[in-house]
Length: 140
Image (tube, rainbow, N blue to C red; front, side):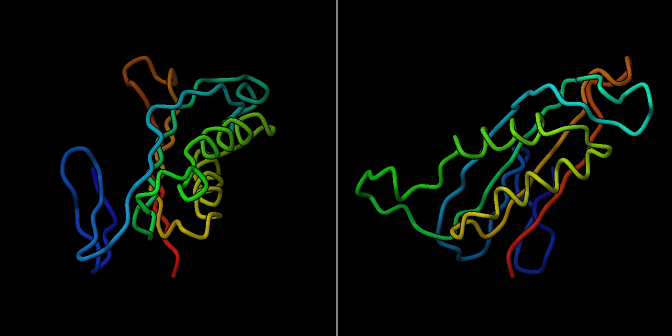
């Protein structure tokens, strides 16, 4: 899998995790969240709720404080609830739009500097496990 492909980011290992040279911080992730969603451009897809799988990895630009305080951590529960709200928020034409909305949600936390979002439509073609997009965003 590809990570951030800018000069200061490098491709990571097969797990898809991205790294930055000399960066302090940590990552928060949500893996394989499957939600029903009305998504697609064709008339027969409107109003039909299909399974969509979402993966998100957030790069947090702060070190872990070490004092075990929940208020100081980026909360993955917020991401899960936000993805569910996006899926329940009405019909979406494009998986790109869904992924962009998830990326925007993740970057809303001031501590998050970058995000990688994968959105896959499941059960679309019998000969594939999924089809979808990868969106990568980072703050300037």
